[in-house]
Length: 115
Length: 111
Image 1 (tube, rainbow over the protein chains, first blue to last red):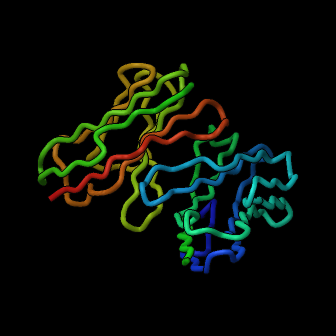
Image 2 (cartoon, rainbow over the protein chains, first blue to last red):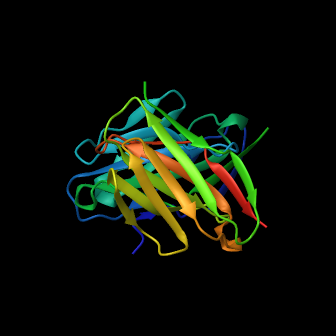
């Protein structure tokens, strides 16, 4: 069974719009970590955030915010006032204590921000 | 500071030729090391991971192999490349659960 689901394959928005990228995960571990990575056209994956399973506080970093809800097994990522530079593929990932913390990635969501 | 080096950046190889991609990490000791492949479909496929020198775990059976001759060196190899080996190969490292740092990747085209 897929452990990390990013149901949105591609999202297209116009600059300055807000956009939310969904991530739903599945795990039986009580100790796990969730991540978001950004992959710009250059290809390198850039770490955005790490969240452990015991910390459900939402986080805001500039125009980026993350909503972690254990009740719905979701870890959604919102970009406020999107910019063209936000265009990239975004990956959500899960690592579990029972899985030796080997990460499982979702299939990614391609975000296209039009000027 | 920790850095990860991966080379070459791009590679075009004929079918049947050998392959060697190298990844080295600086600024950390005893990291977990990973090789991922990203095909045109965009998903990241874990190929190999290593928790220590000489310890390699394979996730997907195929004609690729990996080796870890030194603590901070991870090599991806093939004796004979197939067309299906084309893709974007990423090396990564981690310590415990503290996130994963990726190299800049190698774009391999098998012709």
